Image (cartoon, rainbow, N blue to C red; front, side):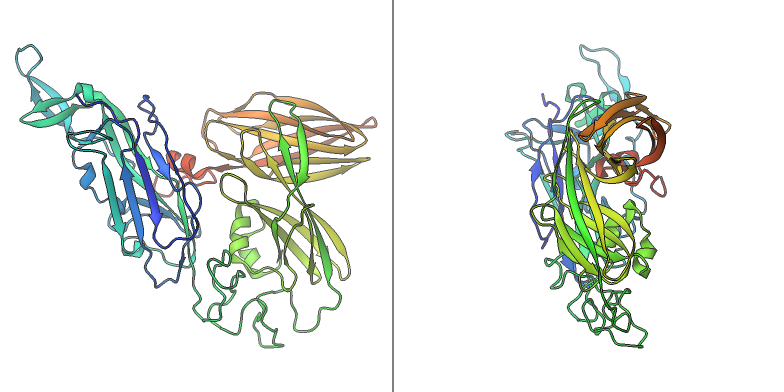
Length: 526
């Protein structure tokens, strides 16, 4: 008798990709509502292609366990290369042109089969579906393990990838699994009764990221550009139709073109530049409602300054949701708008007078890079303005970009997440406080509808120290919007109220499972 498969591996790889991948196995839970899948390629992979070049990909599915899995007949023959979800540069969902909107796994057909009961008796009619077996390791009949590979010579044959930019591809396979113990045979065909369904939904891999990069004018600058792996020059071209226009090109007076891809550069000399003094810090927060917190430098952090008045930045908008797009899609201020922090977390960017958005790219030990941004008001000639970039490392191993407010009296810093990325039903919301002088801070949170906090408020005493307060918020609904925050401050007998909010973001896995975008909005067509 065959038994239910314990593990199944599913993955997507891009041929010719840059960077490595890793495979993680995940045991199939016995609960039918859990996803029976382990995934491959858990780290981002980037691919360098001109829009006219083919993008070869491989979809793979493998039984990595010992027993067989029982699934709907014909599963192994389905066109798995058509079951990809691809996110475009603007976050749009792209599915195979031959399938239209991808399904989420339809129910089995309502077929009825005659069955002779064990021990004899009259025929009974049982609703079920023909099945096939995906053999496990060491299974002799049929021999295992089951391995399926579908190679796609060019993704663009089946998926509309219209413009250069950054894409994410993910395998999403409709799938059903049945209890092998309940199988019966009808006219020589193995049948699973509908009542024996163990799982119905989708199998999915983690997303694989790739870039569709173009250098249409042949000037050696590409759009977009991630780093030197994608193009000889890491700065993105602001005009890929004119070879004389690219970052660092000499500015030609009165020609109507932004020759150096820096709108802040006028046609005449800018005179004395200003300086952005970067100070980058990592806050590590412990467990519990009043956890310990430590602070250290963010060393070797890549930073870039972008002109806030440029058409590119204005098109995206200055908000945390767009920092990654601005990093990849807009030209940094030239010539001094690119740098990297030293071992103490400091660096200085020399820029023309103007207003800037400073963004840092932090690549944590696990997970995808995050982007920390800080808006800087008018920088005058010869002026130095401090810019603080901060990251909070939470006790569950995840990191979030931080924002801050300063309150004067003596001085109090309120450091809180820019957003929290959700990957399940519960997340930590940490708040870090640093002061000069004695402050009492009572922090309360207002989660949106469908969310519950473990505490209504937390009080923290801050006296020239680094302290923290931390809430645990549980999702019992589905209204994915920002959490309101109120800080009631007491200092030298005076009271003050500071209001804020913490944004929300969904992990790829959670967003796909709920049919939402990573910002909690419904996917079009769902």
